[in-house]
Length: 311
Image (tube, rainbow, N blue to C red; front, side, top):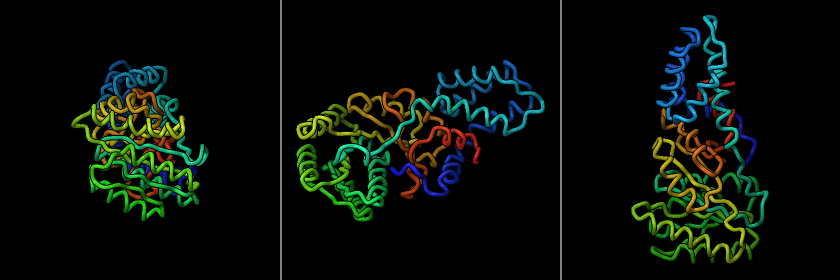
């Protein structure tokens, strides 16, 4: 993705995280503005943070950070929010990384994994549009060959983005399609190959076998492929996103996380425990339907928006 967010991204981020911000800060701010810092207030802070889905481990560390601060009767709302934003950012900064498909080998192969309904196909389409907008030659590959609706949706995104599209009939072998598409992309000098995959969890072992087969055939062409595997998670499922990360994260060799639909939940704080539970860093976040609403993850900007601070 373009590392320079379009004008207004921070405003959209703050607006998108508005429900999460209200959930997190109303009780926290009122606690510390009304009374000096004390053990009772710190206990309530920890409870509020856990209720906001930050998770008990991060909540405990943030409370310890607040324990060293000095809030008095003159403390105002912004002072408390600034302190909370810094504490959340400290949790997330080590988990921030960039998705840079135009700075790697060509064609740069990205595999998209995640459950159906997580926003995986839409995320892929938005990335394709961003890349073609930068002049890249992009191929989209529909390896969810079991859902016609998924292929149709992806074809719409390919047309919208000006990307080339590869698919097969219903029930075709996803790995065979991936192999043929990557072979073609190398021969025809594509810059980026974006591969959508199935997300059916009814039979986890069959799904993982399918994903690993795709990875194996790609490695026959290039041992380093896929060059990125992005796990797309839906923030609206709250802490269930942790379970999804555990299902996909290690088995599918995930290298980066994408958190979508942050504008549709009051529990945007779930990003913190998901990031800390994963071996992979957060690379992109989404707060809306527009192409410009998917942007590189910035821990400080996210944390400030999460607590209702917009610079």
